[in-house]
Structure formats: structure tokens, C-alpha cells
Length: 369
Image 1 (cartoon, rainbow, N blue to C red):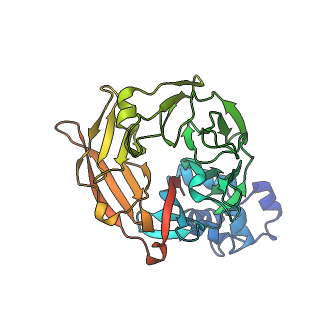
Image 2 (cartoon, helix red, strand yellow):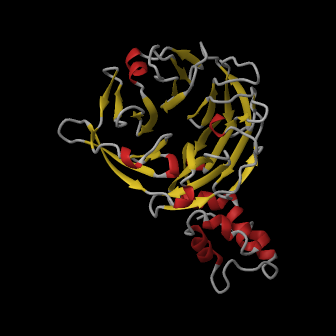
Image 3 (tube, rainbow, N blue to C red):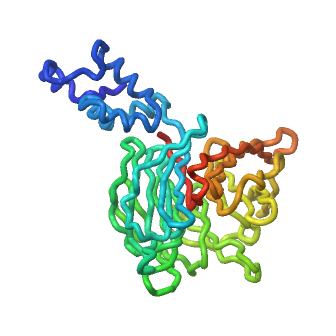
């Protein structure tokens, strides 16, 4: 295990001047105790002492946590108060059903919450909130806000190349791709695409879309990002869509079957694309690429009686998480039938605390913490 208490030579030279992590315990044992503290208590424990803060903020601490497989998935939900539009980020531990409220995001107070786009680097414990719109001036923003679960803190990243709002983002092979949206004061759809590299901390241009879209849903499967405006009322026009190939930096048309059947919010599980339909009883479908068609998922019906729109959707480790108005969460365990190879789902609902009843979800992301 990596040494978390600083350089060994410095430790030897300052042995009498540095307080131990836990008095009476060897530092190696104390480090293990800190590693097993669950999120978000590790970040809170930094305030206990300077030695704890030094150990927990050491990059080797996160490396050790990963190597011991101690990081677990949490759902991070961007929500806003329905009356005041006040933004609040919170994290859900799906194992204990406990919620943790995050520190305030360093954005202007007068913003339109649904205008932000969110993406994550799950295994790195990083959440990115991009773009957005000021509600007082109705102008798009070029903001990049970054949350780190290891410190439970926000920071401001480099500005985007193009101010944009109501757009799509996705994590494609470890890089964040931002697609389309609305610009500042023009009212025109943006076709410009840009890519953020976590390694360099910079935004760079990517191949433009062929046409702008009226609204955006997106999903990433492998090295491709699928973007569609989806079906909207009154369902008179076939939705426009495109597929971005990150390896070739090119756009191509989405297949007819995928585009026509994309009738809800998307989520990717183990490389398979699902949608939670936004009509009727919200049936769940899975895309069959070999047939270019969508097939209904069997099993339980979606718990529509406990879930009110709007929805925010994400998934991890074979489970779909649907967050509804009031922040109730429907968790769908997806499994494959042994006899015919079809997919089925079993739903359960986590009822949110009453303090969340006036909040609506705008986005949800998965982070390991």
C-alpha cells in the first residue's frame, strides 16, 4: 500500500515534530482506518487534525482506495426548488438510502437550472457542470464547475470555447464532449462541438454537427456519442439525430430504427442502450443494434404512481436510477432471461425525505467515492 503520510525521509527527519495520525497506532494501521471511512466522512475528517488532512489529501490516498476497491457508486443529483429555482446538489447512498447535501456550487444565483449540462468521470470521483444560462439576462454561459468527491469541494475550471445552454454532454473514453445547444442572445442552434481533456485541463474544438437540434438527449456507447432531440409533442416531425465517432472525429447519421424508437430518457448499462419512455406508463426499452429496433423490457411495470415528471436518469452496475419530482428514486435491477435472452427489470422505490418534496431533478450522475 502507498505511504500516505508524506516522504519517508522527511518523516524520519521530522519524527518528533509531526503528530501521529491516531495516537498509539502505527501510521500504516491508522491509514487503513482512514481509508475505510465512507463518503462523505473522509472529506469531513480532514478538519480533525493537520495530519489527517495531509494524509487524506495526498494523491496516494485515492490510489490506495482504488487499489483496495473501497470506492462505491453514489448518485449525485442536481435539483432545483420549483418555486425559487434555487439549486441544490445532493448525493444518494443507494445502499443505506441516505442523502448528503453537497456544498453550494460556485455559480451565479440567477441561473436557469435545466440549462446546465452535466458529465462525470466516475472512477476519478469528478463531476463537471458546464455552460448554463443566466435567468436575469437570458444569456448563455461558458462556465466549467468541477466537484471532487475526495475533497467534497467545488472548483472553477477553464471556460468553454463557446457559451452554450440546453446542450448535450458525454464522457467518451475519458474526455468530456459538449454538443450543440443555444448561444448567447442569438436564438440560433449551435453546431459547434468541443472536447475537454482532464489530463491537460483544456477545451479544444471537435468536428461540428451537421445540424442543430431543438432539444437534446444523448448516450455514449463505446467510442460513439449518440445525440437526438427525441420525439416531442405533437409528434408531427421525425426527430433529428447524429452520431459522433470520437476516434475519427466525424459525424454520421443515426440509423432510422434507433432514431424513431428513441422515445424517452436514455441510460447505458454494460454497453447496452436503454430508454425510459416518457409516455403512458413509462415502459422501458432496449436497443437491439443487429436488428436496428427497440425491444420492450419485461418484468415489473415502472412505478408510475410514485414517480412524477420531470425525470433524471443514470445507471451503474446493472441498475437504473430514475429520480423524479420530490426526489423519489426508482431503482431498476436489470437482468437477462436465461431462456430467450430478453431483458427484464425489477423495480423498487426509495422515498425521499419530506424536505425534498419541493425540489425537481435536472440531472443525475454516478461517481465512485
